[in-house]
Picture 1 (cartoon, rainbow, N blue to C red):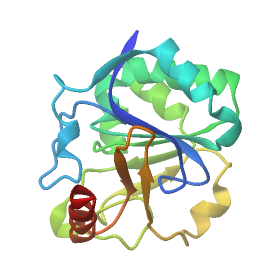
Picture 2: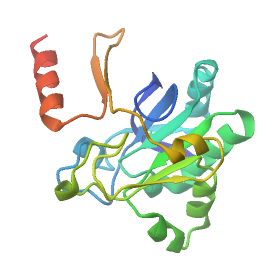
Picture 3: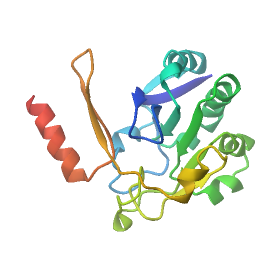
Picture 4: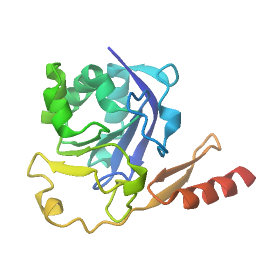
Length: 201
């Protein structure tokens, strides 16, 4: 089985608690207006990778990691393949799982496909809801609008659930290839300014 991915960052500290493997899947059926990552929408783009190969990549960094975070695109558009990956990680590691979805929790619960619920059951943290520009709000960590909700399905982050005193941050990484990668959450004008500096560089 394969997953269509946009990219991944092996180790990040700005997309969830602790050091995390961050995965962006490719393809989105929701396509929020003024989305931060519209380049992840087109299902015909991205890179197909087998679950086994992606699992091996994650495992090669596992000693450095607290968990894995999955963004979109829309992760639940590929719920079957993603479930296979996350299930394998849960069975063989102690990595925590954080998944973001533009669908609401209630919508996913109503879906017929059982793997939607099975995937939710594997999450330590689940974040739901589409980005809504008129509700734009960066006062909470990792989310872009006030309608988006956190669900803590296990006790692993129960202390975090009580009080979310975490600031949004950006990291800028220069890869071995010379590519400059910016990740994290900030105002669009800040990101645009940084991208301008990077393009000049």
